Length: 135
Image (cartoon, rainbow, N blue to C red; front, side, top):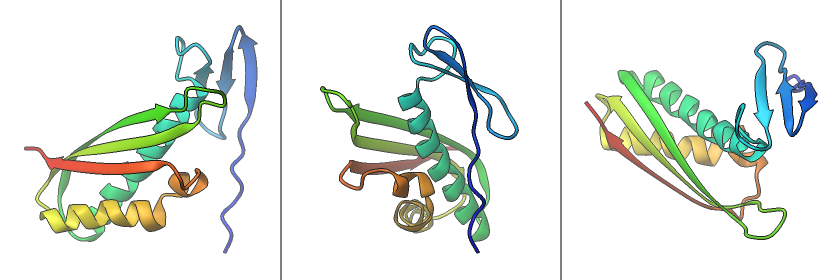
């Protein structure tokens, strides 16, 4: 069964600022990163968010308690336009009782199978992940 299409609306507010209105919650996209994330920052947030959601979901479905998750993203960009992402590093700080192999498997499943944002990007982007368990 096909997923419904994503529907978004961007309204120019002046300068390089737009209000983004997905079907539910408004967000400001700002080309100068002052009133909200820039478009390329929003892409990074989408990637980090997609994988974070997957990791929590997979760990919980494996009956592991998750008490916290912080995901840090560092993205390198090409120096010349279009200045696309060339490398991404995601670090997950997970509060959990899950063993290391379960965390590693959750990250791997997100990257290899489930994260639709990652699979929408160019696959030649150098991609690394790491994690640590926090109290």
